[in-house]
Figure 1: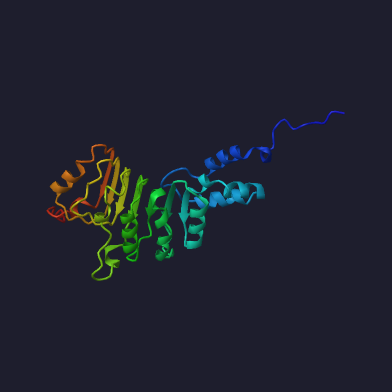
Figure 2 (figure 1 turned 180 degrees about the vertical axis):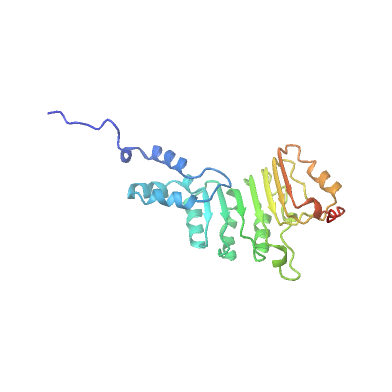
Length: 238
């Protein structure tokens, strides 16, 4: 007698290459939309051993790292991503800042970097990372600490650490509570620039001249910046 066969192929019979393509659709594929990436990845790994091994064996599925409070987890992600370009999101204030040294050897393959949990302890670590150079970096988003939280004598993070030769491919820059130094505007390749509550030692004319070199700029967003410039007086109170 002929056996009845299910006309729909079982998913566990799919070759690894097709499974990986499906998994990549399930895991967020965007520079900065990293929220929930870890949960999506682990949900897939919990289905069965076959999927668990498939995820661990594919470096492309570890490109997007939503770093929590564990340096060990970051280390695991860096290892499993192998030589792939990586996007890192730091959003947990409990992450041990000294562990930032883990990503220094991988700076050449960082494609996007988002740090939202910055405290005063981050400032020297961030300077070391930026001075290391990130030739593949395309998107950078930094949110500095509140000015009143900085210890006496400690300067907040500044754009003086951003050197064009070290980040030649940077085209998206978002800064919140970062000091804009005199050499700001040295990235002519920028296409998107967001500035929020940034201290600025430039005058309005100097700021306009600085961003005028960004001939490819398509998107500019300024919030609580213009009134912080050197020669701009705050509007009179009613």
